[in-house]
Amino acid sequence: MANQSESKKISVNSTISLKGIVKAIFNDTVHVQIGGKIITIPTSEFMLEK
Image 1: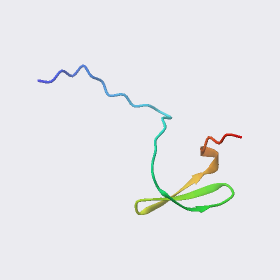
Image 2: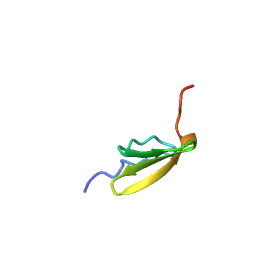
Image 3: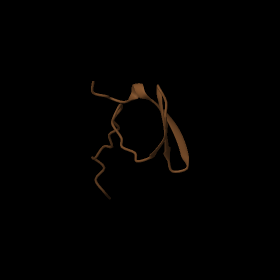
């Protein structure tokens, strides 16, 4: 049997990267198409340097 001492860790608030097509940008939201779905991301979720 395999050694089961390895534990799977789940990280909260981790960063993921998804490639998509930006369909529309409004004042406070960005609409991105990933696969067959369009998701809306509020611009407050982006870490923008000012």
